[in-house]
Length: 173
Image 1 (cartoon, rainbow, N blue to C red):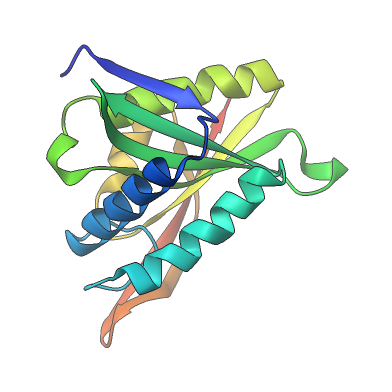
Image 2 (tube, rainbow, N blue to C red):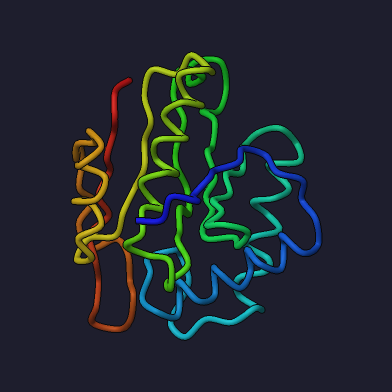
């Protein structure tokens, strides 16, 4: 584990940061990460997805978290606030991803701990997220107190003949 990992909430959205996020998303997707893109993926697929997510950040609807390992961007993700007044007590983690060459070094754990601190500051009561079945990713989140509350069978089509479940996890704060 690297001691130099830090997580920033809402860093300035510079062109350089935007380019790093695009590259991480491409790299994670192309190494099999379940981040909403087909394999192989390209800039043409990732860039519009990132732009939509950043538009929500700029509007104040969502938050961007960026993890740094030393001076390098090592990962990122979004915290999506519940829509409307009936849902403001919870948020959803979306597209949490760690650069493949930084995985296993505590970056993801640092991001989850930062999300917990930020959620507490916001007065949130729950954090939600979804993961693709068949990847084992749920075990990572379960280590932090998340529990599977629903499974939607065969809703994700990774490739013809490869349909996966979507697992819904919640952590009550």
